[in-house]
Length: 480
Image (cartoon, rainbow, N blue to C red; front, side, top):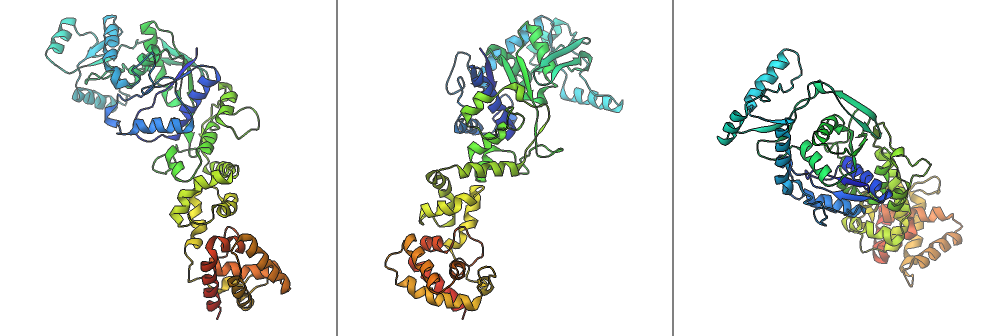
């Protein structure tokens, strides 16, 4: 059975690159009828962020990527948090020491820094020189017994080739002479990320490792460990990075890196996931819009790209707008309500708001600015706004229109959209005016701005009789 894993470090919010890694790993497992495992890799305690694990849970569940095994749901291969597995790593490292495939190293930071500086002075790239490799067993035992700090290093062969086959990148081989003797167990007893990764993947039965291509350089060392233990290697699928442009990766500094950033900017999670799925994968046809079930059905590694994916926020915004158009008015209102409250219009007719805003909204954070005039009229608007060549209006025409409209609206028996519509358009016909000639001054007086979502009739309904008449009277007074 296919067993994939998403193994994030709890160091903050969900980066879009991590989100895509999780998504592809989930889709591959589901498409192949396999298991999707969540593992929290918290061995780097210096970078641990309180609450970050909950962010991981919340994000994956919010999107619909439910895991089959993990810290909170259990499974046969737990614990699923690395720090809770701490005691299992040292015995594996000690096994390698006994077999000559790893060794204890007592070199201090100062000693290593001095050798690193000497290598730099010689114009060489520093690589650990196996200084402690041939230390007599008795000396090793004496120094450990004395409480001297040590690490355990992998004994990488000095010659030969370390290689692996990647589904995306093909065969990759590295000269062992170029590889460093990486640390397996740190001085604090915790495993390094690379060592824990290998032990966990093997003991959890992971068959397919999907991760970013920044791990391509580490994978030969991983495979040397698999070979040292005599274990079957997983299938490797390395993903290209997501870039902001040809030179720059997505970054927190630019506010374009995190899933929750985009939720806060008013994007729908469905649009984010759909767009992220297409960053480095092609379904093989012209489709652009997918539900999660459709992604599961369509996903295959054959559609994954070897080229970096460029994150185009304009394309995401376009896709988000398309998703917004497809919402029911009720769904749109549910998403828009926090922004109505922010703008002070939550008490207005939601059906009318949805009708005028849904076709114009690309991201929900646009709403407060679009409806700010409903909450408060800018009293300093210019009377020049009443001039519009297309509608054949100017301040003089506008004054005449408002003088006609105000008493008629005041006497209207009921304040409904149909009643306001019938009255205003009927008055235009009676006066021999184009509808726009009458409606333009009414809308300007109510809104105080030229561009508004919705026309005069919708705005009047949203404002209500009292506020509409107050604003029309104010406009008339401005016109003198």
